[in-house]
Image 1 (tube, rainbow, N blue to C red):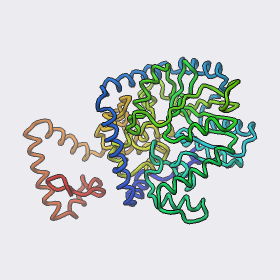
Image 2: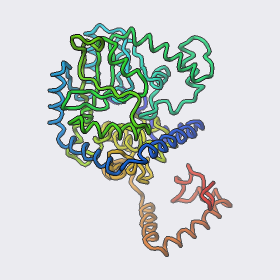
Image 3: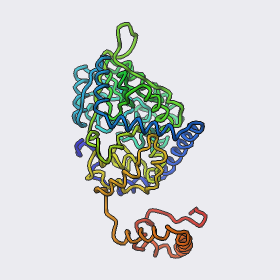
Image 4: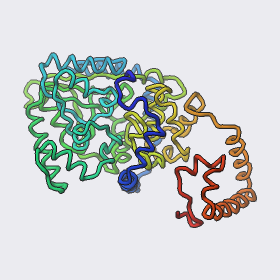
Length: 460
């Protein structure tokens, strides 16, 4: 994707995060929502040997990516046997071109879409709109994002950053009247709008959570019925699938489904698991007349066999965002592209280059919470450190390196640890008396500028 395609290019993480930190609702809403999801995740796997399940998931993803080309060839052959037309796209421009050509050949005027981070990645909607097509996002959150010419701020929850009042205002503009401040009423209005779009659309576009090679099946996980409406009612269905989303067998899918649903939303399974294996066949009452799959590279193949190959294991559950202390404060838009949180800090510089994303690996506390929660055990902590070493941001100063070395020395023994804690308590006491002098300190100045000081009990 060219840098000029994206309105967020040209602003830095520091400026974007400062803008997000100035939104009190966002700083309350994101931790509240992510805490709920994390609690649901722990409940979901309470009676499961989650360590063993995660290890199986890691092994499936690692073995698949290691032999990706062979699995892709099997997948393509199975797709074609099922009557699916397959297109390969080396980059975002090629993917947009393929989809635009399919829509043009179908004489499409209206397109309905299922929530898809891959279509966000290639900036598909503006390209289709430039061709005169009406594009309707049919996931409720994505629908609101699209109305506001906005971007999703979370992989799973695209409008986690919006208040109900903001959603009401967006829908009221469409209605041409003030809608009531009631969730059921707002949802009912959106449902009515989308029902008309489903019935009149010429093309339905979806992503693909997985593509199963042995059966030639596109798998979609959704919590709204829009996924099935988009893929079965229009005459043409187009699925955009990252090449890394292939799974060899249905047995592998049986492992990945609970990992994705449980890690993403804390559910046993999402409300709808759709398995699509081609266009409508003779004698079938519904389904599209044509089905196309566009296989998207867009920087993925360049990671194969290299130090960052494990980034391709990601199944886009969003769990690492939910636990990341940086994401929980600044939200997804601060990362400047489609993917936020730890996985965004890894993927953005890898897919877009260090000119756009090189500072993001620094946007991490390196606490390792993302490693602990990732359902396929991606070592995000290690990948972030590697990116820092190869150019991901400002190098530490001599003073910072000396401070870190001294800190490591102190904490290598019990005596040093206890002594540092005693000094820290004294420092907190002095800071409450002389906070300005702390902010001017040469080592802690940038750290203290964005943080409040806790009391001895851990509370400000």
